Image (cartoon, rainbow, N blue to C red; front, side, top):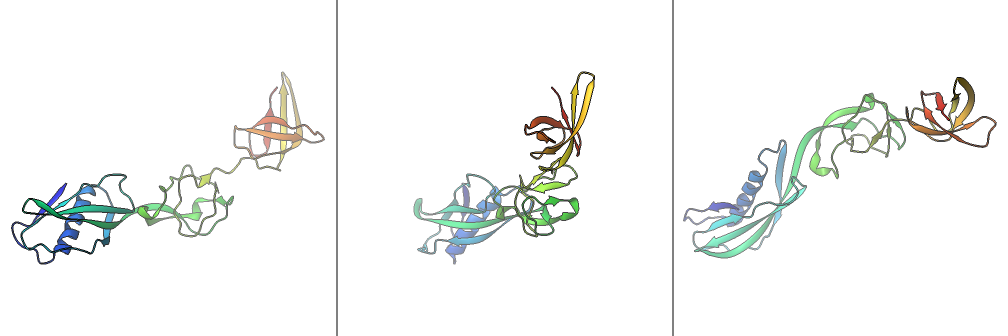
Length: 220
């Protein structure tokens, strides 16, 4: 609990004193949080001004931290008796560097490094954490995005090595015998991952493994 004693002196503006006490509690909780700032969001307006010296006690801040909005309970004590309790609210902001989209993109679009830039964003205004960019691209978008939006966790997938509907070479190996035939991919596939393909002239799909952007290997 954070204490703000008035030292036996009467405070000309107890409302401001309550706000200051709450703000100091936030500052205490925010120690070590880089880029964190806050602003008054509102407080209980009704207050009976004490006529004697008083002491303010701010409650500790619990729960997830940091978060977009935080309330601090401040108790007003005079002559060893609690004569009031007030809630003061603050909006929190935390500035940090993050990758953002340079332009609007549709779901399924392929994204290149040139489509991203770095900018300051308010982490408290986001519903989840910004995503980390893995690899050097390209990537495929899982959702539509607007220009300036930060890249969020789960936004990007690596694009498929082979796309559904693409013509591929199907390599079938059986012992020392190796056959190559044309076929069509029935689904997307990534390198070394499984994929279903349909050999030309056949109605029966087979399952193979993606070897390259044009080659699927089927092993008995």
